[in-house]
Image (cartoon, rainbow, N blue to C red; front, side, top):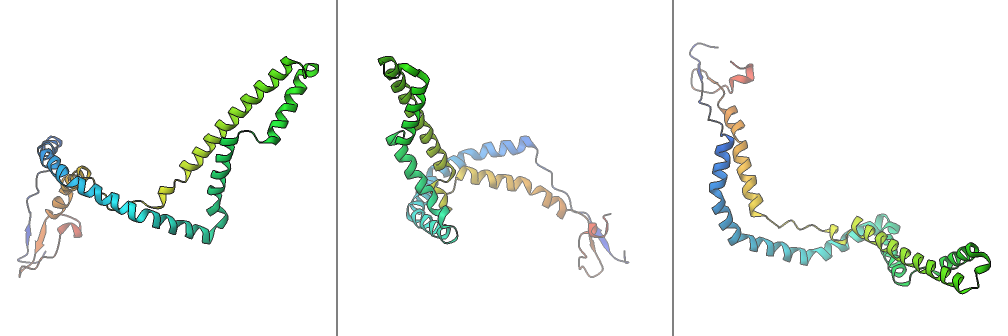
Length: 204
């Protein structure tokens, strides 16, 4: 270190304790609540209006982009939705009905034309029809949840003031490291021009 150089040791600020942080946040809660009551409805309304205005446009653009690169995938969900809706409304198709009827007739043998045989076939056929409608409905719900229409647009204007205050508070508490870094020893050579943090040359 050259002659006349000085080393300054700035005081390190005291790191806030968990109790102090919690107390300060608790004391700020009335202000947070008042701000939420005053401003949150406006932010919510802006988010709703933005979503109502732009969601259809974003969904349309998203669909056009998908159509341009993958036309089959773009139309697949709509085709599946239509087929599943028809299946839930109409029940077993004729081909499946005939298959089950033949299966149940083969199970009852020579009782096929008796009232017991008829009831057996009809009862089981109704059960298969109900199960088919339920299964197709569950499949449709799964497809709808896997690719919801609303995923094409997520509003960016929404703001939750409670979360915003919490983030600001955490940022303030996390700033201690920067203050502590700034408080590391500094070398000032003759003439008063700082050479920077002493730690850049290996610390004290």
